[in-house]
Amino acid sequence: MAFVSRGVDGAVLVDVSGSAWRIGPPPEFGAFPVGSGDSLMGGFAAALAAGLPLPEAARRGAAVAAANALHPGQGRVDRADVERLEPGITLTVVR
Image 1 (cartoon, rainbow, N blue to C red):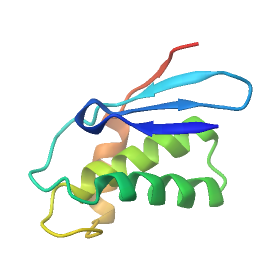
Image 2 (spheres, rainbow, N blue to C red):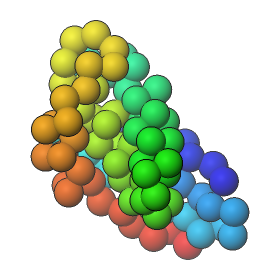
Image 3 (cartoon, rainbow, N blue to C red):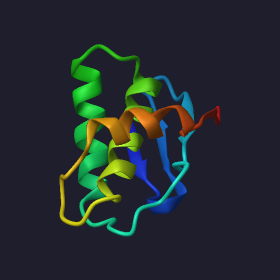
């Protein structure tokens, strides 16, 4: 599996079978992107641990990353921001 951040352009996820998705970009952009890549992976890992399917876990990770960028500093993620942003992050099947 590979999960690659594309910064403000979202991310790409490829699973072990070769299925691929384009995730995002987020519906809004914050002014504080430092740490958002780490937040993407942390949110993704937490969502997988909670039992979300792979593409939905990627969407959650992208929402956490976008929420991180809304506040100065790294890792300052508000759950309400994640919940508000997540539905607006697209999942597009690439192959």
